[in-house]
Amino acid sequence: MTVRATSGPTGHPEPVIRAGAGAGAGLDDGPSTSTSTSTDIDLGGGAGRIEPDGGMRTTGRAPDVLRCGPYVLDRARIAGFAAAVGDPHPAYTDPVAARALGHPDTLAPPTYLVTLAAHAEDQLLRARPDIPGLDGAVHRAQSLRHARPAHAGDVLHATVRLTDVAHLAGRRLLTLDCAFHDADGLWVATTTSTLLCRPLDPTGSEHP
Image (cartoon, rainbow, N blue to C red; front, side, top):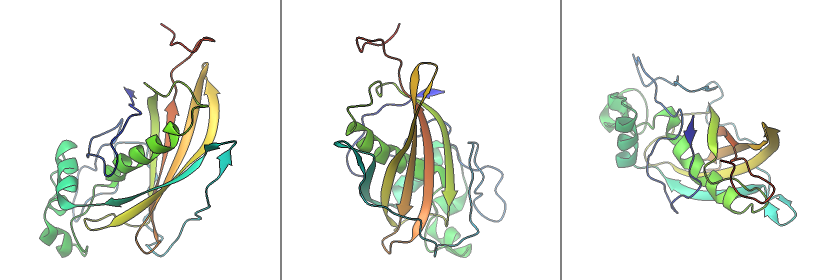
């Protein structure tokens, strides 16, 4: 497990890797949608499906749904992420190679959207002062569901939801869904993260 930082940049985040965000390996005809994470990817529905996108919901004054973006995917950031995870497939860096496989531009590795989800999640969690212990929270698990690959040139909007707050070993265990839609409102992918907050004593300080 790795420690997740809750402070993030505004706008499009740098393509850094969070816990378990590896890229596919053993590629043959095209970039694989398998990852080294616990990932559930569904490519069977096509880009025409639209996930339900509810409005802003709040618990008291603290939001549990937030819309973020736009996130503009560009070739340089995609290539940087592919290099960071050690995936040499040319479709991640060469638009000609990607178009030869039937895609409009360079492909983003399947886990690239985790970096955007992390930014959106941080925006929502910073608006939740009722959830202490976020600094140094542990990124416990990540799953992804894709309707289609993301490409350079995509303009994505994220709707991030805090879907559950449970408790594990005296810590809060948060579950967040982050749904990405393109400029036409079509669903592209959804990530689900679970975060284990830092344990707090009754005074609000961190346990040793």
